[in-house]
Image 1 (tube, rainbow, N blue to C red):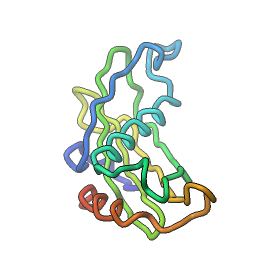
Image 2: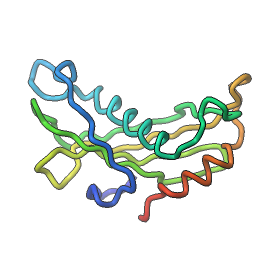
Image 3: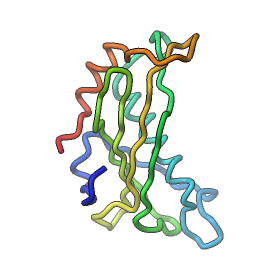
Image 4: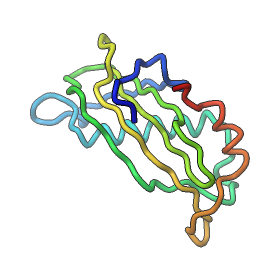
Length: 144
């Protein structure tokens, strides 16, 4: 993960994430646990954009590691956009870099990463990622 927060323009894929009423806590800002939900929504959007037939791939991605750095709170009725890209493609893993941005703020309010390891659907043992994922994923690599 970078020491300096990146701008939204740095990320090859962006998704607007609706902030729901139940995302807020008693202090009228988005609960920190919801940042991970937003990360997950961004990852699902990116995986969908890859146009891979996930129901028929021989292997599927499992979360192996995640991290979030909280940089600012998200106040009530804010609009959030997630920027996401692939920071690493290994033999059997993808590492997503994700940042959350709030309307009217240049710097991210949160940033982090999630690592997916591909596992066989039946044995749940690590296997190389499908070639179609590698090919389509290359379109979303970060230009650091």
